[in-house]
Image (cartoon, rainbow, N blue to C red):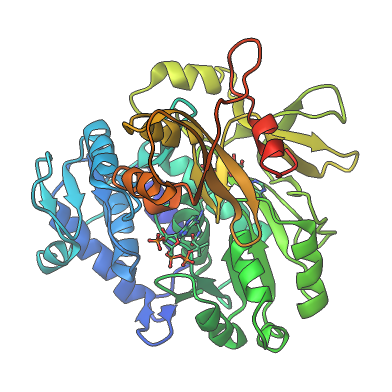
Length: 473
Ligand code: MCA
Ligand code: AMP
């Protein structure tokens, strides 16, 4: 490619055939029509290269087109979960300072331009020429919560996104013959980049679902080839009748974003005859490791480093340590946070993930825990610190500690352990927290205690709390 091209758009369009269906199902759309729609939106954005476009909309094909429109126009996409409260959204708007904020409710935001997706589509024009962008230019900023409670914007370049999609397309054998069931949200790496970029790059089709539904996935499977999901997808599908028959002609089931229990892996194999392929990634790194397509897919492991990705454990051979990653897949730093970037991304290119891992003699990586205080509920990440700050600000609360407790459906669920200043009820506290926190971050349960267990340094002992509350620890 030459420098006159748009690096990511060029890579994603390399295999596209205009007449091939990109979206299949009840509202089909060809590749040609899909990209034309993206070009029309790109014209309507009226941005200059490097401008941020914040997208906070429900999942739709048009949302995917807005992602690509931003890329084509040389902008930087900032996707946000529509479940965020106003105060959460304001933080992102103030940090990202977008030129355009796309939202169904454009009134009353402190931004230069807020508009709906429908208004943008109506203002679209054909004949837009992609803006040239090189590999190191940014294509997206994805916010990922921080252990300090402040979300960090991971800056993702055209190079990082294009190279990871290419690696995964090859590693997982995606071709134009594939039909991928897309039931993930599109404001995270998993649904936006892993699923969408691979399908585009392979010229494959997508069975597009606005949200996860066991029934719709079972209906789609007989004419589809692949599914990408978080472990909750698989545990919920395992509860359904007719799974084995529906899955007969599928070629690939991929799981990631949270640990897949070895028992789920085994049960899936027993019920369907298929072996789930588990992989490991992060917003900052895209995908790092994957179980092999052809070789042994080992339950409880996240497989081998992907081609072009270096993985190492910061510990003596075979022991548990922090997982470090280096490669073209990596982000370019945290937006507006040079100190944070310097702490986690070293000048020699190694990024410290904060995940604790162990590598066996064959090179298979197992994630054994997290060095960072993080809860993963149904594939959504929740940083306890952020929830604790909201709980502690409530007038009835003296102090709180937020922990993840095992949950059969979501893997982990958020529980707040609270020391009260004055009398109140669990539901009143949960409702009050919900005014400032997206629902998925709100505690599903509150446990009242007289004091929080602390070590000699004064740090709350969360493992001890989990044990006391009957969750192993
Ligand atoms: C929904 N709710 C949740 C969650 N999802 N609560 C806790 N944890 C969750 N994950 C709450 C809602 O706020 C709502 O609460 C109620 O459950 C019903 O909401 P609904 O949307 O109908 O729920 P659902 O359809 O059952 O959703 C469960 C889900 C979904 C399908 C597991 O959470 C999901 O799609 N998760 C995937 C997340 C994902 O893509 N993660 C990738 C990020 P109320 O009733 O109180 O209003 S990680 C990533 O990208 C990295 C790089 C990687 O490696 O992939
Ligand atoms: P995110 O905030 O979306 O970037 O979440 C990334 C985190 O999800 C990683 O740092 C891991 O802790 C976790 N994760 C992703 N994939 C897996 C997996 N297959 N097994 C266990 N944890 C995972």
